Length: 194
Ligand code: IMP
View 1 (cartoon, rainbow, N blue to C red):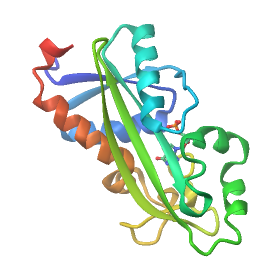
View 2 (view 1 turned 120 degrees about the vertical axis):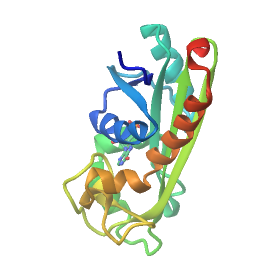
View 3 (view 1 turned 135 degrees about the vertical axis):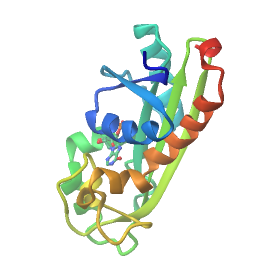
């Protein structure tokens, strides 16, 4: 029998699952994917969106689980697309963001990730951020979403899209949130908690 602590990740994004598996494995935590489309409310706040989605997913699945909500915040665009990242990616995508940024000298941006874990009794959140800038063109075929236009500050000038998954997860916003989450899970008497 696998004696590792087990956590369920409710998401329809397989890219997120692959990234989360790498980090949680380092903490000896077993990740199980619950493939499902999450219900997302409209809000200016990623944490509010994540908490709501986690609670709805818990109602649907009846299992302790976590969700993760992320957004790309661009300084010169006053934080846009931020909490609307999913809709913006679906509509104007990376090409549209590059057009909006075409006359901007300051290309600073950051990704934020919020994890919300719900056990039916309470919901706990964990945040991570990575700072960087928007590239001038689309570069790289790895990852997903805005990866090909985001150059992390901690990297070597390549976009996330030009990095393989282990390079991205070494520095990403998601990893930072996942590490806080994993530390917390490790510290719990999990059998009583869930
Ligand atoms: P979600 O609501 O967290 O699924 O993500 C909002 C939007 O941001 C989606 O279009 C994702 O593809 C994109 N996104 C989320 N996380 C990342 C990431 O780590 N890299 C690039 N794009 C991301």
